Image (cartoon, rainbow, N blue to C red; front, top):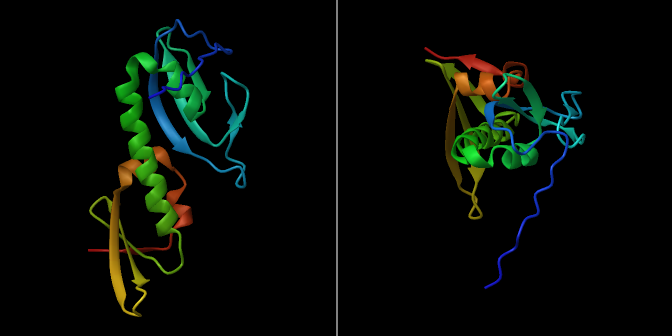
Length: 149
């Protein structure tokens, strides 16, 4: 079995520095919510804010954040996992056929899926508003929300 070896290249930010992930947020090039990565200078829409030991903060893309935080990878992995869950939830929630309810600091989504045999199944998903606020701050503008009790 062969293993692929990844070459790590130093870009603008030194690899010898320790970086901590502060936040991950979703942007969109179409909405103009993007920036240039402080490490590799590429345009990014998934923006990770990292901080070095001196307190300096940098905005980098997901790939650069993974490289810069390899010594603290578990923290990065958890934040990216939650970020991906928020993005997956929002991809379904923004569809016009999805009913959205806000109740007890949670957003609930419900939608119907037609099976091959013509029957329908009801699917449900939920996401904490605190995670939506952190990872996708403009989520309220993207959803048609029914207030729950």
